[in-house]
Length: 344
Image 1 (cartoon, rainbow, N blue to C red):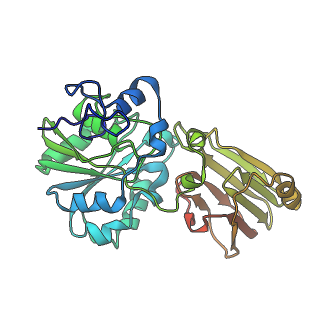
Image 2 (cartoon, rainbow, N blue to C red):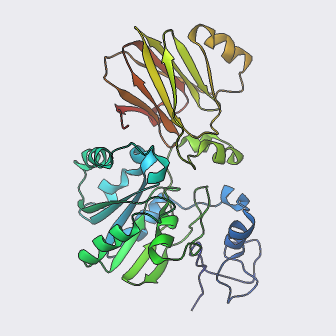
Image 3 (cartoon, rainbow, N blue to C red):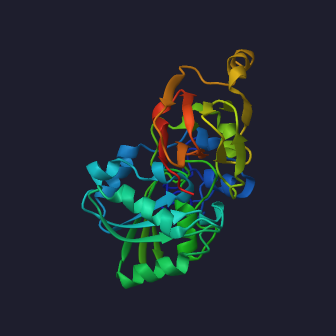
């Protein structure tokens, strides 16, 4: 029987140091890759290794059990993958919203859950329950375990887009904070990973790749600055004139208010965002041509909306309130920018 790395699930091997799964001893718990991630924070191998989304879906489809769909609460709109309709229709689901501690404490859980359920309304799945976790999975776990026990679920299949907090949640469930390998970057889990715990079996699966992700346009070294890794510290600006906000390497949002209006930014505190007058935006772009991506596309919003968000999926959002002549968005991945009723 081949031993597997408990961190990423890959088969361990001792013969080819350049290949995945290499370890000095076949009796080791971790492959060299996971060992270096855990002990030295060496994430360089994640640049070149990921898993096909189709491969993940095909594997999950062959497994019996309840789907544990893990969604980052700061990125709900990305977390609901379109493959549900094609691959996992009619399956039973428990949905867990992770990273609750990153939202402002004033946020209503009922409002967030209502938004999630509205997104699920037309999906062909059976939602058995919704749970929430925070503080690296420590809070909310008891409630989730009670749901699992009440529903008499013996096998859970943990599924989710990459970097949604799936491995962190599983570690919290099994009570071992350092069991599965965790990093701030996607594609840490490489294979189906079967874990026995007090209430049955949990099957960890590789994170599903988000197609056309903003992170695909960034250098690996930028990930930590652009990822939401700590609590939001929202910044609010009163707008009595047209303003533009430039997100380095991502794009520009220009806001032209009718009267007084406001915009609140919910992004990583390390996100490089610059503000300038709308009248200066062309000269700013000309002077900083390397700041924006190539193949820029433009989207304009002119319809009247109440308090609403403009979401840059995976990155965060702008919350706007007031009346506006126009809002103009310029970015290379315009399909990854959506509007929604204000979440907060």
